[in-house]
Length: 137
Image (cartoon, rainbow, N blue to C red; front, side):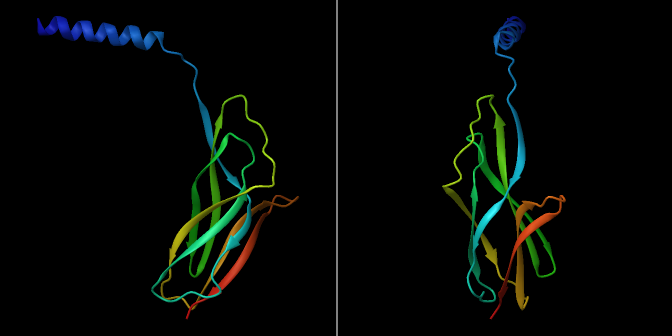
């Protein structure tokens, strides 16, 4: 009897799976340009500070996914990453409303930190950055 129940469940799952819509949702991740960054004038060693970054959401199919964050010595390169879900009906958004996102930064032993916020590429394809140096006291 148990074997019959297992076979019945298998066939029901196969039937329901076969009836499901096979449309795939396509998505990808995309860097978006940082327009503004808000940092304190100075950091206090051993404390955590909130850094706020603003960007324009290009379409209604874009949503904040996180940060691409790289460190090298006292330099931090920060990019905003959006998830883009291709729904076939994406519309461009006005570039009047900035989206603000933030992350917490723990201050270590460096004497200063240099933040490089990605602002896109220039006409030659070179990355452009908003660069801010913050001293540590």
